[in-house]
Length: 133
Image 1 (cartoon, rainbow, N blue to C red):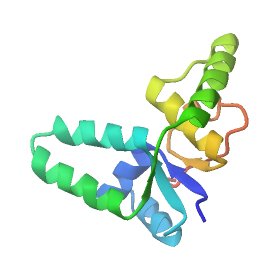
Image 2: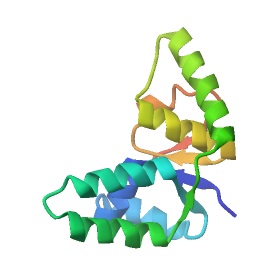
Image 3: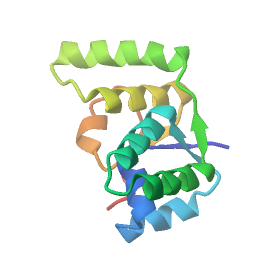
């Protein structure tokens, strides 16, 4: 049963095995994690613009093959609209990709795993954990 949605920065930590705690906690929760299609897009972008795109794309594909990649659909879009409006009214917006990932996690009832707590803690009714500490 899924419980966690990994933010892009945590996915990168696990791929690089740094910090070691992120990879260790990742291994403890095998089978309970997913990534958003938004996170996959960010990982693919990073690989494509790297100095070794073919090698890095293979690493991303291998990493994502061990997780469920959740499609971004109408339910996530509805949460996006609600969250963006709330954050704009409060004067505390967050980045567009983080906003989409937060909306996706909240729409699926999943805990977002990130080391950008300062961003995600602003999102109403979103559970947040940091596995990099």
